[in-house]
Length: 497
Image (cartoon, rainbow, N blue to C red; front, side, top):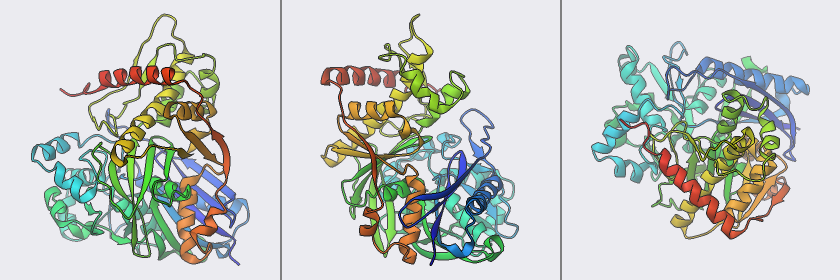
């Protein structure tokens, strides 16, 4: 009897491996951070070999910590930082350039050119995405245009492109499988979310050869096996989903209308829209949630670029705290924000503003402003950004929010969760397991191999830890939001020449 599902959770700042049992309990978890490379302001890269090695190492450490053998593992599920772009040589297996991370802004000018050429509506219609440097397509074009001999190698069918899921799978299967699933493909600007195929017209516009693209596979289903050379015994790879779609599935937001928010490096709010690819009029993204048994499930998504990263900035650059967890204690030293607002537009603003030239600001500072006010402003900025996305979702769907399911590291912060409930005026539900991204990947893999029989069985696994109910007065909420929106306006367009 197989005991575990192994979830590989490859994130923006760390690689993690978690072994889950049939009750959805974490039996073992190992995490390794890896190097963040900042060649210039606005540029963010990773070493793909370090990504792979840290991910493989965490898997082996998680197994050895509890004496789990490869024969004990029913399947592997993979979830990953999305949009991060890797191109490698198929013959040597060596990347031709560093991974260009989703936060990277080097292709902002390219995006401006595409907009000037009138392509914005075409891309939105086919991909559900807004034209932004956030997505993989222009990053891939940049690598092909700027790395020596890249286009020549591509013409000779020697290159492979992939998001991080593709890179991990390629290495896990000893170079046998060059694949991605629809949830990841739908974040590239190259994939038609209505046909489920790479779009030839978009490939032509971006001058990207189709031969370098991965094969598209279901989000849940056996797509290959991890090499016996890595684990002594072949293990089926049976689930792939981009981190936010995986977290949506892990939060069991599997019915239309359900909404989750993940509080990680960024914030990602997804609303399940079922079989309907709802077109946003409020600058949200339409994205594939997952594809199982030939059925495609869509979501509306609002992406906030900087959330937990604002707390990291308070810790690492401002040095107000030693550990990220200390920010809650510091923020609670003051009863309000003292009129201080932070707009953490360190990498521009995501949904619903999509201003790649916005930059961070702190406003409302007086002689009485303390570190505690700054810490509180950083936490409040996360909740304010989420409220902007929720407001946009309401405008698109006509439906307000009755409950928000949450996950991710920052949702351990009780101050933030209470403030989020207050500013949204809705209930916030925090589950017992906060590793919902990894759990979602485990669910997708587990269902594919019969480890769990159905989503009904999964409903028994998901449990609530705490419910936060709104307590704030209407007047206070309106005052805070009014000043937040004034601050956002002042941050916009700052870096544009």
